[in-house]
Structures are given as C-alpha cells and as structure tokens.
Image (cartoon, rainbow, N blue to C red; front, side):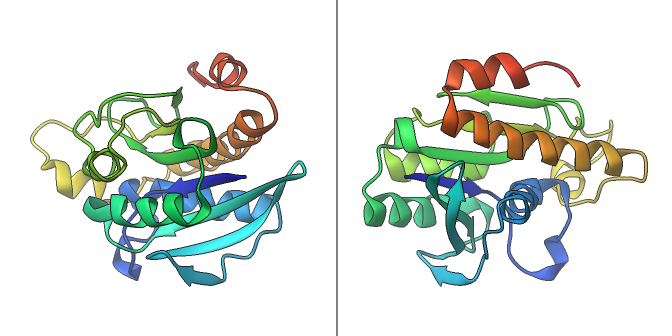
Length: 189
C-alpha cells in the first residue's frame, strides 16, 4: 500500500495558491483514479482507492502547512508503512520553474516548513517526494505573500499540465521504481 500526501493549507482562502499545489495534485489524482476524498481522519481529508491495482491512501493534511508532520505521522503509524518505500509527498518548490517537477528519494527540507515538520515527526529525511515548481518569487516580494498568491493567467495552463504529470509520476513511482520515475519526470517541461 502507498500513502500519497499532498501538502497545503485548509480553508477556502488558500484554495488554488502556489503553496497548495500539493492539495491540487491530490485532487487531480483522485479525479484520475475515481477516488473519493470523503474521509476525515488522521488530521487529514483522505480517500482510499487503487492506482493500477495497487491500494493507495490519498491525503490532504488539515493541520496547516507548518504542522503537516502531525498528520503524516498518524497516517504512517496507523497503516504501518515503510516511509522510504511507500510514502510519496507532493509539495511546492520555489527553486523550480513553474510546472517543473523534481522527484527525490530523500533530502533536507530546503526551507519548506511542511517538509521540515514531516522530517521532524518521522525522524528521517528518507521518503520519496515530488516537488512541483511554482517559480521563484519576484524581487522585492515577501515570500509568504508570493507562495500564498495564485498563478497568473499564463501560468495556469502550465500548472494544469504539471498536475497531469504529477498524477502520471505517482503511477510510475507505484508501478515501476523511483529511478524510472526520476528519469522520466526530472527534466524541464
């Protein structure tokens, strides 16, 4: 079984912001595989279903970004998964161009507070993740204002395509292996 977690902030004011691209990815995956996000447990909105015959739990933590690790820890403990093999975390990355994906098997938080919380709660940096590029903040912008802002009209179609790639990348991570997924998706689009 795999747990796929998309990071974001709950409440309507954060919907469709750069920082909520993880939530958007979970919604896209749920749509692609007809998985209902209809359960509230483990401090998350969850859905259970299958991707290519493999059972998955999709989760959108409702703890707010900086406390994402609380929800992920509960999910990992309840389902007793191996985080290095069966957890996939999807989140925004300002160091990547808009729509660019980067799959990694481990790594530091890189300044991302949601990942920092997950690393602290799991006690490891070794878990697969899909970073989704949201672009670097413009000069003289506050970082929080930028990541809590929305994509402009030119970026929206790029992000829709990126979300389709994220869904495909999750399928690749589940049905193939991390190296294959990295070779396919760790390139500029």
